Length: 212
Image (cartoon, rainbow, N blue to C red):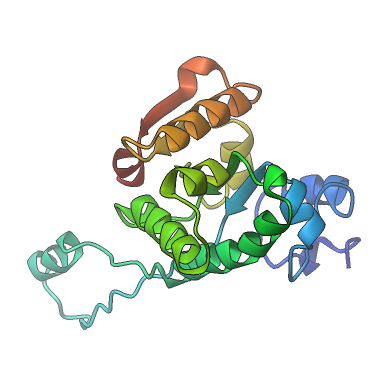
């Protein structure tokens, strides 16, 4: 019920006020992207959950030193949702590109989920292997069709809307040595320059961006 703020599954300051101004105007929720939208869009954002698979087994009597030792090992994230999303997307795009190659050139996939280091390179491998298993396209042709960048979010609970609208920085990561990913990074830099000042935009290699 759009008239009821409590119906939103996320509680966040000012979220409802923004949501009601864009819902069913330029914000829609669908279970599957139609072919015509997938064929004509320029940017595809990957925003899926990457839950922690680290299992901390400790009781209330744990010492501070032992707790610190556990936390220092880091948190392992499950990347399966991201991997599946990109593979499914690639499988959808392949027949559409074969039908109309001109529509699939320089599309940019923006990875925005919280991910582990080297994830963007792994996503590139998934796209290439999926294409080469189903087509005769070269790697350069594949990269020209779908370019990857990593743009992490820096959102905090309670101030997520403010963090989104007024970010203190925008980090854009590209795959090192991949000219199409580097061009995509430059494109996204121009895109975000409409939102934040140029000095707040940081372009890095994908591995560095995933460490932030």
